[in-house]
Length: 379
Picture 1: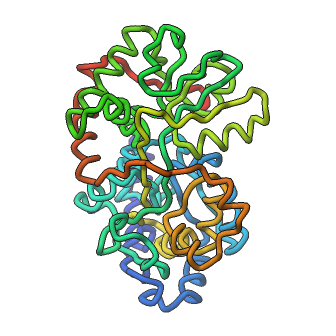
Picture 2: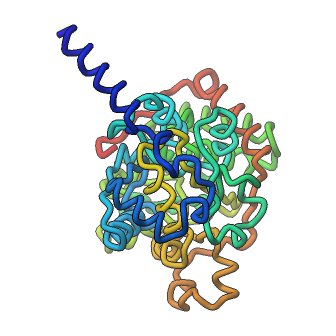
């Protein structure tokens, strides 16, 4: 057994030395399609690699299933999908754990909460790359050097199974009512998930507190929710909501609406943007610094930020980051615009505010709330 382990290790080192890792590719350091020789050359190099490895992309999240299939059909590149249920921190852990491993467990690209972008840059886990449509991306939603940039956004909402919940809550504060015993869940683990961290913070912001004080108020809110027996410590998703295991889920508007459409009335879901706070969240894309398929990673970025890729996300009820520029250019079909949930009046926090809140929530969850959020059976 020890000889086999040594043999595998030696083979891994040989592969890395022979170009299995991102550093050996001529495009490993390309910061634009132009540096890769132009789009035709980038496509050819990506097709030669033949594979793109993604992580944490559930097919029902922002229509990622449709986006992935469209990318595969357009370029003939296979997509190796890792751990669809992973959180942002786990995505970066996967990069770190596999930085010397050019095998199939090493992600080429990540889709993470905006606060995780600067963290990944500082840790040397991602590389800069500016897509052709770079100028359409708002300045406050991108790293100026191109290490990470916004891809889509939405607003936190209550996703409610109306077959299980007769009195649909209208505000975060309502969730403490005895009517919701054993019914409220987060869509992720607040130690690793961007959505869960922001959800905890949103409940604190709903009390009128701001900044780090709101993060502390959010932790206290979930302490009360747990002590009242209302909190279900499960990483909820469309399945747990549909079967009534977590009939009230705090999640993004786009996920809730997509889940309602997918369930087609069995049961009916209601998407409620809480009246006591409307918190918006931006996710960002980045290329792994150790991408085994660096050309495919960059081609994926170009596709996602093209009109086609952006409209693919819009088809999943997400506002693509280029939405304003595309609307101004008249390339967003009216029927697509009509189905997007409203973000009117939503609060878009700064990265600094999110970082401060995240530090409080991740650091205080175990001591204040004292409960572990377990993966769902479908996770």
